[in-house]
Length: 176
Image (cartoon, rainbow, N blue to C red; front, side, top):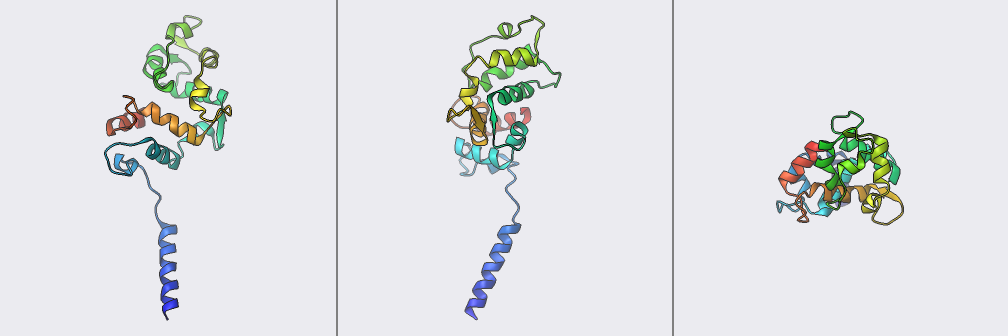
């Protein structure tokens, strides 16, 4: 009888576990797993990976090449989807994507002085920088989902204090 009760309890637990709703990560507290009002890199990577955000960049692949990273970055920075990056779009985002280590200027990248960057202009300039290696932690010339998540943590951490607060997360989610 005890064995039947034990097996029944195990069965109920397995059923509850298998039917449980996956964590949604809709609110700040969902991302802040230790409830300390700050999201550390580990927490951010876990949430980012769980939400399949990488699929936007990797299209179902486990990693992307540097050229794919450059193209996806261009598309992400082109907020108005005009197939070009304005000076305003560039200035608002380039340092974030370079983790604060960008020293160039929009004018230097705007080769034809049109006032906006085409995909070709952007990619020709970004590929001669260290951009890919900033995101590629293991130097395999590919950016994995985990590396992308780690990089996005630094993009989200606007004040560079090593954690993401509620305001930073809200801004990142609104602008991604």
